[in-house]
Image 1 (cartoon, rainbow, N blue to C red):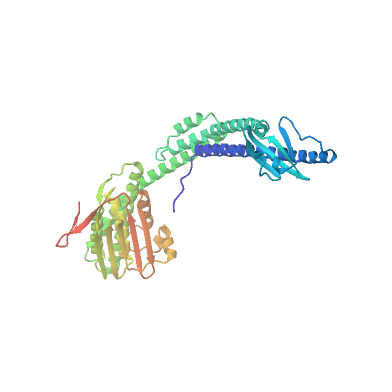
Image 2: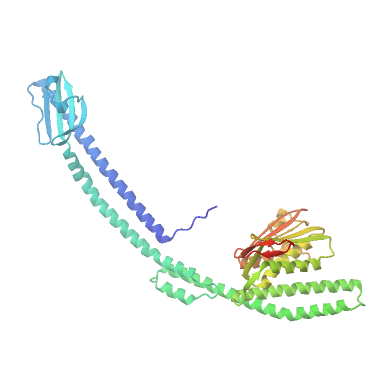
Length: 443
């Protein structure tokens, strides 16, 4: 579906002004034609008919009544058809437009008792009348309308220009480091409009709160990540030492193993929080990362972790993908998605495909219903149905959104789940297989 691009306010005002001018001009042209039509039909034609009726009424009284003869109207009376001149030949009763050597004329023809009356009106006067009584007043009106429309356009544009200037200032603000002083300077340059002052004050207050929220998030993420590392390391090392003892009872060993896995989960979560905090601060180290290598490492880890389960793990590569990112961030996303697939598949297959479209992980596990699929990225669902040692899809979703990667999940109960990660900025090179079946990039 094509999304319509929003119009600029100045452009909308200009379109409204042009539309207004076009409508006024069209109305003016229509007015001229209507004026000419009204003068011809209501004045001239009606006058000629009344003049003809008056002449025939007078002729009944006196046959010698002369035909009308004025500056603009000339009458001709013919008693026999053979006396008709060429310009009147073929004209039946009614109104006719006749072109003569002296110009255009309007001819009214009527007949009574075998006599013919032709009233000839100078049509050039029609245009003069239309000009005097229609076009001249209309031209004055147009000047007034055009002038008022232009003044209204200038006033409106001047009134909305502070809003446009303020919108551009807000657009250029970096939320990571908002410069409220420049915003205040731009507001002062608008001329101190009261409504703009209220809007700018609200924006400054909002940006101030956003800045404080971001700073608190940075401090919490950074400090929590650093403070959690030491106790988690102690718990993991203590768990490793306990698991190394031969005299540990099986129930106690199972509890220690759970503690160790929980500590590993917390270490991974702490590392993600620290990485995200560094990305917020712009200090996260990014480099060219080969997605295939990261995916292969995580794939091998899952083969070792879930080797005891009746699973068939397969990995295929049709393209070699390279992205500008942090290797650890990419490993966390792909690793958790793959471990999640293995954890929710008791038996069957887990397949990984690296192609030009991105990374696709498919499993034949328990799957999810539409209700669970709609809330799969919420932390509550992750805690309720957590299995394995992953950090949950909610944080994976946050990471993919932060790096503008696409993440799509499709699933059916008892048929499995498919997760697709689209790396929009990835560089891809086709992978070809040689005769021995080995893969290599086709540079």
